[in-house]
Image: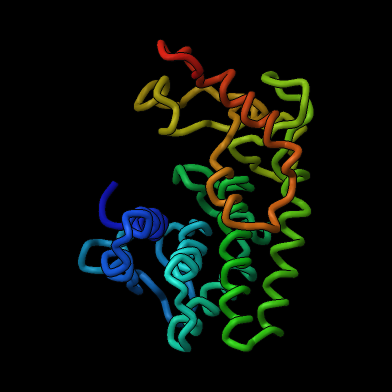
Length: 252
């Protein structure tokens, strides 16, 4: 992966804070790849801060909000940039779909409704709302919380299948192309599928109900307004059924 990513910076800052190195965490705050006109943070940047790949990943726009929350940054300059990002996030549209539909999800090769992306977006908006309230702007904070509540209320309908092959209970898919998790929509997995990387030229098409996801779990821990907690055991067991292997020391 060339260059730098906002979500990587946020994760690294979290690690630095756990290590009690606030200076190192603060050094990761940067407006690399930020478009002040649109409010969009680019997919990734060069180490010099120039946008490298330019497809829209909504989790990359949410990541600076999470980083600001980790560092308790609610000064006017920071909030101005974050609000621009939030406006881009909540107003984004692509191919006739409105946010939280994303041109790319976290693995960078699919468009659609991703529970991981939606979790990041909800967590980002909830975090920004908290910063805004502490800065005295409750009205804007409440507007972003309303969007976060609406998205978290719809995430199951967009991404949790009831008829997938891995569990009799609903579980989250990696993503849906159309927000219809029980439709069985088929799509090419792309370069995230080792069995089809570079061969054949047209990879096999898999049922959209097959790839499961647990990538929503990390961001959802940061967002107290994340819904669908009843999906967690089924989603976890589905991922374990697909990917888990017995460990000599016990467990998976």
